[in-house]
Amino acid sequence: MSPAELGDEERAALEKEIEDNRRSEYRLLPYAGIALLVIAAIVVVRVVIFP
Image (cartoon, rainbow, N blue to C red; front, side, top):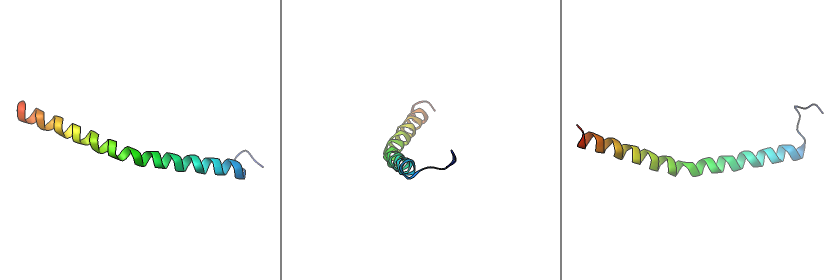
């Protein structure tokens, strides 16, 4: 087996880690939405108060 080839255990561990990372990335979407709302609010306040 060359260093580039993975055994079944290593492949399963990597697939599990990739799936865990994918799930955690989906949990970031609400935080991104909140951040965009905060930025939009800041821009609106700047435009209204400091024309």
